[in-house]
Length: 155
Image (cartoon, rainbow, N blue to C red; front, side, top):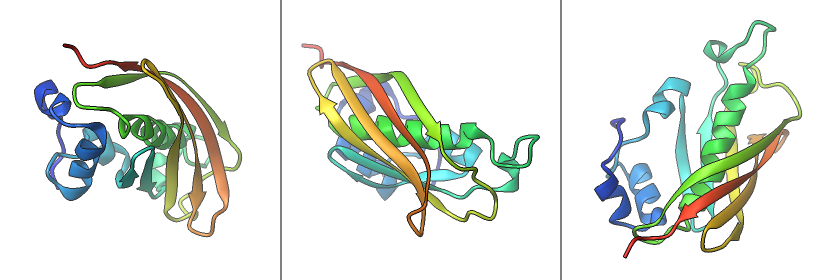
């Protein structure tokens, strides 16, 4: 699978769910950040997005655990894509704020984790989502909420 960024015209020519499913199916490139941190979009439905990643030694901070930015990036991706999955053709969004709670450390021994984002509210110009990071046994590592600004389609 390739990484890259599609043009704005390509992005806005389809609804959000179709675009995100296209990333999973390989019709569109994966965002470059997924190579940088080693995670990827694995599931999307309207109002839901899930990313899987595996904490590794390359993600460690000086105190000997995975840097919180790894979890925060997974959650920002999952929550933002939950909002993105609700977009109509021509709509766009951006994150206004995100609040993350890191409840236990990730380490290279944690194994794969899933960050799942779920839509809470979707209005004409605002979307909110919540989500969490859990390991395969269901143990919680972090949870978050976000608020996104939605830009209605022009025209």
